[in-house]
Length: 130
Figure 1: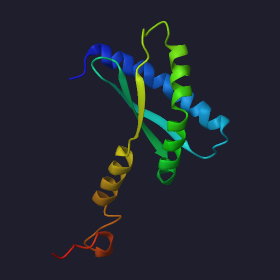
Figure 2 (figure 1 turned 180 degrees about the horizontal axis):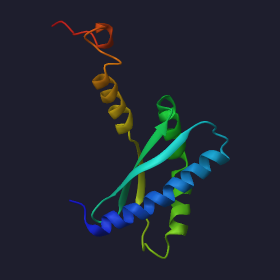
Figure 3 (figure 1 turned 30 degrees about the vertical axis):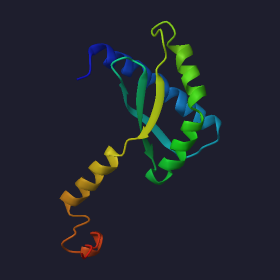
């Protein structure tokens, strides 16, 4: 159960981290990649913030995640500068890929019958024999 304070701090961090990541990727010369921060979950003691990012196109997600993790200290410093009047201590940031949009898209395609596994069984992974 998330407290009201955790939600507020998560919302503040979400906005600031999104702007900082987009600026960092733009300055690094990364073109054609869209990164959005979908959620920031803060622990009850406000020491750790888990940042969930949605990255498009999905095949670039791991490379962008490693790039962002390399810039973690710079991102934390910039967020601390922006939130210094709102937070006493800046939580430690940890970044994760949020693939829920891709998962929803796969379900949507299956429901619409675009990728129907009954008509083309090659879509399903082969069963392993024991």
